[in-house]
Length: 506
Ligand SMILES: *[C@@H]1O[C@H](CO)[C@@H](O)[C@H](O)[C@H]1NC(C)=O
Ligand SMILES: *[C@@H]1O[C@H](CO)[C@@H](O)[C@H](O)[C@H]1NC(C)=O
Ligand SMILES: CC(=O)N[C@H]1CO[C@H](CO)[C@@H](O)[C@@H]1O
Image (cartoon, rainbow, N blue to C red; front, side, top):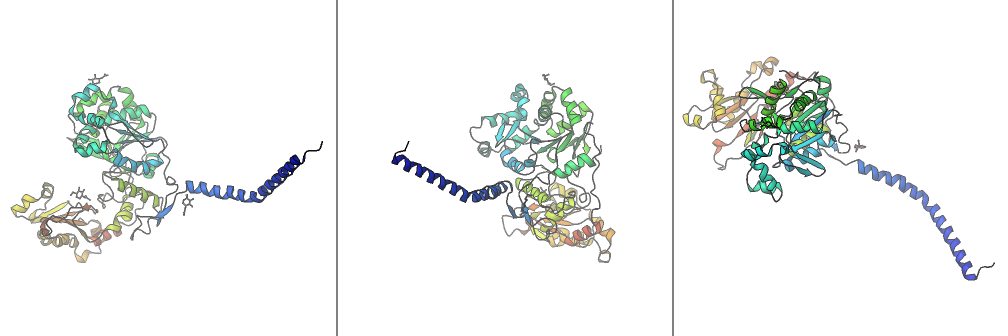
């Protein structure tokens, strides 16, 4: 059958169309392939590999120690395997949103599922859940004990916590409530994540050096997590030793299991005692002593309550590896994390490495309106008025008049006089003597209102407000460092041959 002309035209048109399409396909195919394999690949890598920036902690003085650039891709590449270890972070509703995001953006971003966050209120922060440690406390106790008032007002806050907090200063109330969180947190931790080897308890202003921590726990501590172990930086209250909470403390799985499983009412037993004791970290020590018969093993200075700018560098704080630091604000946490990632070496991070990389570049002869925390030995004007004004701590550390040399006798008179105490400690003829350099007692000074204090260690410290009246030179804070003495001491110490791992002792 012969098709009508219209349908034949249609067929020809169809064939031409198909041929055109095939030709177009054949022509474009190589480009599609290139697109697929090149551009698609590029898209994927730029998704996974993040930018490289100038390293903001790279400074004159640490060029040999940190990289010039910070490659932000793969930030967990140097992070250790933390299998078997759980981080338990304690915060409070008054501070959680100020402190936690930086923790989550830095070290905790490399701890998938290996942490719990507890607070005094249940909250949600992006994908992270913050548990209310106090939820398990008896309702009657919460009503009866006035320290729980904040717990209620927080929950009644109609807007964000920040706005409610700003309206009235609740720092003291937050502190009073804090002590009740410790034991419920310990109890819930075991219930929610049982069976780990180690539990590291920290606060939102604690920094954990994970590479050191894991290396120490696994290879250097010689500790068996099945034993009952309680590690931390030891403090005392009325002669009762406990691990200072802010520095971070560590419980073995062995002790946590026994403590929580054998005592079904651990929280209830200590709520009332909370009203009579200052602090929750002390309550933890009391519970461990009473129920498990164990005491803290001193792990200081590796577990440490200071931060890079306040660490007293020198004797006892040099070749020791660092496991934790405290009082770190969000910016400091981010900075130390960046330092850990941009170090030029993977060897164990010792306290001196913090000094060399982060502090040494900031050292100078003196700083005005600055307090460097010099307070080991003090020289105060004997005049009763000056003695009256000096703070108790400085007065307690005054050197006796008859033990002072001529320089020391004049030290209170001015910052320049104060500086001379360090400058003249080692007589010129001994200035090359290594023993004397190592035994140096004066590395830095601080002068304020006829009080001169010097320090046996060196630290950076922090700014102090300028006196309101610019003329009032007497009350300004001046801090200075005897750089030659510090330099000689560091030279005399030489390289740390081995990291000085601390054996935790009872
Ligand atoms: C940054 O690190 C990623 C992952 O380790 C790597 O693929 C990339 O090449 C690095 N970029 C630069 C500029 O070094
Ligand atoms: C828990 O201990 C407290 C204090 O000893 C007690 O008042 C409370 O009744 C106990 N709770 C339970 C459930 O045993
Ligand atoms: C480094 C150091 O110890 N800094 C101290 C400076 O002084 C203030 C108080 O004036 C202390 O709080 C800091 O710890």
